[in-house]
Length: 169
Image 1 (spheres, rainbow, N blue to C red):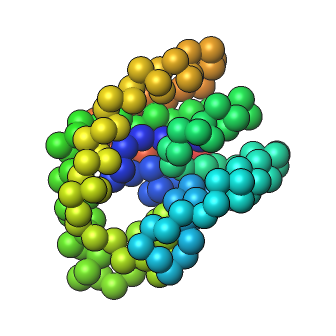
Image 2: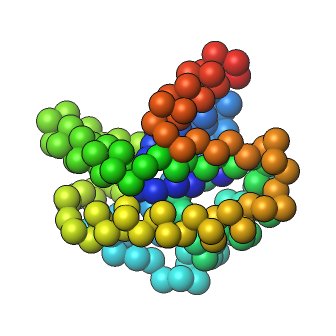
Image 3: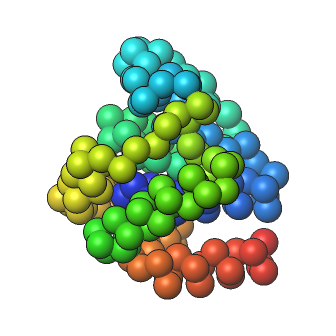
């Protein structure tokens, strides 16, 4: 299970881990929103059903937040990767990702199929609001085995962790 603010590298980390471990990867944005839309949400009951089917499997990697789904996901997770770089670093990464996407014409890991990502005030607000949820996330994982939580609070730590798993797994 991987969570953190928008543009923190959740989907990239999930895709790499899934490939390395040969475990199915599920990006919550692709589960919670209709493809080929500007992030139009699926009905809540449909999301819960799809999410329940995924976490009912023996192996999965899920990236994303969607706080209302997190308690059941934490209960079934075998490890948690909590990406929490600074707000400004995430905004810079979002900006880079947005403009790089337009140059390379290929989607990044986790992008909603057919979606047009836009650099909007709403997206920036979402990134800023994530830090206010830190106490919610801390409480959510407080009973999870500490040796199975990987808390990475900078892009430097994320990069080191990413390189380490590439070598060791």
